[in-house]
Image 1 (cartoon, rainbow, N blue to C red):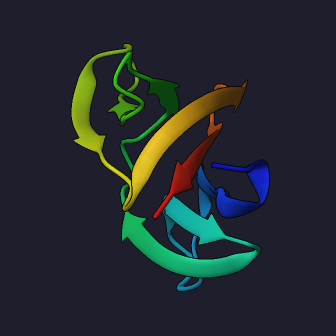
Image 2: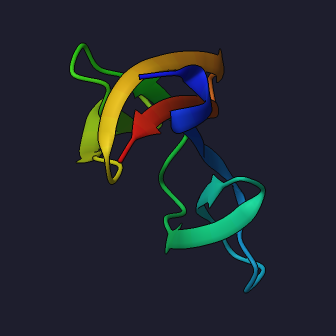
Amino acid sequence: MSPEDESSITVEIGIITDGTPGISITMLDKLIGQLPDSKATSLSLTDSLAVCVCGEHGEQRYLLYVPGTPTKGQQISDTKVVIFVRP
């Protein structure tokens, strides 16, 4: 499978479109989902390329799984991760 067959999905903590704190999920710069979550403070990638949403003291709140088959991931910052997937 060539790199052209992969897409990137970005998960980021910030202010979502309704003006509240939350998590945005984008693919090819298009918003595909949002979760209101005022207690999410950081994100991390798991070994299985799921996104671990953590709270104020680093405790795991929940896991997010992206659609498709994840092939690799990159931790951009404490609040942003990118996962590459293929259909």
